Image (cartoon, rainbow, N blue to C red; front, side, top):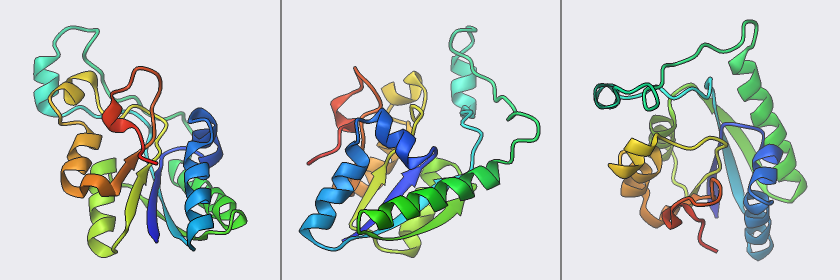
Length: 172
């Protein structure tokens, strides 16, 4: 089995946030049959850029978000490289064949680009932030819905916290 594991924060931090679900999932799969994991580490400031239509609709200050620059001196590319290397090392320890790549594209474009180049049995989305705004989720334009429309059951999304919609729960 070949998995694409999409991360925007350290694997151990993601794993802690999701009660060990991402690594436990891969460990269980590794015990059933050998697995290959490609870690896709996203370069990003973790600041959501809103589509123009959302900026037009969200005129009140509690809805509108503006991009914020990263801390001065913070190298987001080096952070993505470090995150990728740590995840690959951790996955190799649990027995997976692992490699990694870095992408500066936003989540949906990065996943679509990678899945066009290589075939994956499953795409695991284990990101630390909520993908998309509440308006994007309601209108089904958030990254999860956009990826789900193309990948279907290939997409596994780990819970992003209590109260999140059931479509984001990972199947066993």
